[in-house]
Image (cartoon, rainbow, N blue to C red; front, side, top):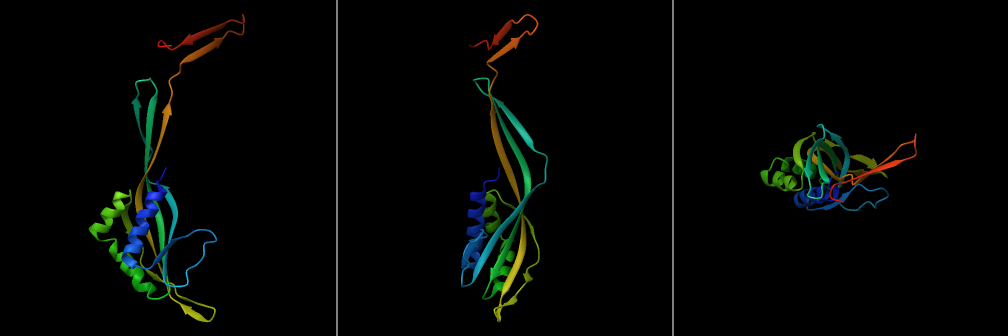
Length: 172
C-alpha cells in the first residue's frame, strides 16, 4: 500500500516551494482558482517488480509477513495562467537538484524522469489562457503487512463412525 498522504505532502512541498503560487491536487468537482496555480494529478501506479516478502516468527508462534513492491508512479504537473510555461520549466528543472531529490526521497519518492514541458495554451471564453504541462515518473515502494496467527486447535470429524478428534496446540 502506498502512503499517499506522505507522497502528496512531498509533492506539494516541492511544487509550492519552487513555484510560490497556489498549488492544488486534482479532485472531482474541486473549485478552480482564478489566479495562477499549479495542479498536481497523481494518475497511476504501475508495479515494476515482483512482490518480495519477509516473514518473522513471533513469540506467540504467529508470523508477521511484510510485503514490498517497487512501483512507478505517474504524476502530471499542470500550470495555469501567468507565466505558465516558465513556471513549468522551472519546476521540471528543479528535479535535477540534489536537495529536491533528497526531500522527495525522504517521503519515499525516487525521481526517475520527466517528459518535456508542453505549451498547451488555449482560447477560453474569447480569452487566451496560458497553460503548460509535463509528466513526472517516480519510483515508490508499496508496502503491506499481515499477521498470520498460529493454528491453536484442529477438529477432525470422522464421518464413518461420527467421532471427533481434537488436536490442540501444545501450549494450550
